[in-house]
Image (cartoon, rainbow, N blue to C red; front, side, top):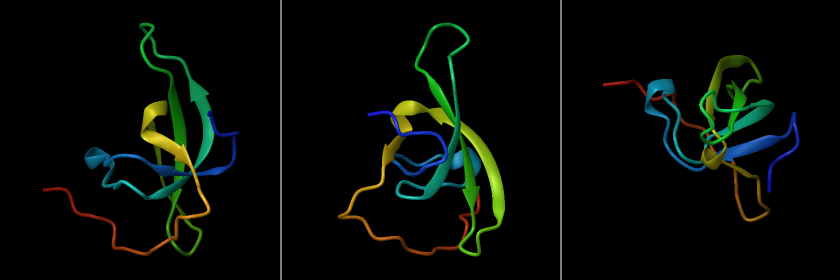
Length: 82
């Protein structure tokens, strides 16, 4: 199921180039078609625990899932690349 715009989602995989990890929460701000007919993408806005916007990333739609009642949020430092 495709989450509605402006709803929170969880990542289903790590996104190392953006220092994001599976389970991180973001907000869907748009959906975009793949330029050569591949998998649809989504634009996500990522916030820190204080609610400040820290990044906007584009990922394949298969990299997100709606939040579920059996999940709990957690806090972690933003991972360093390398």
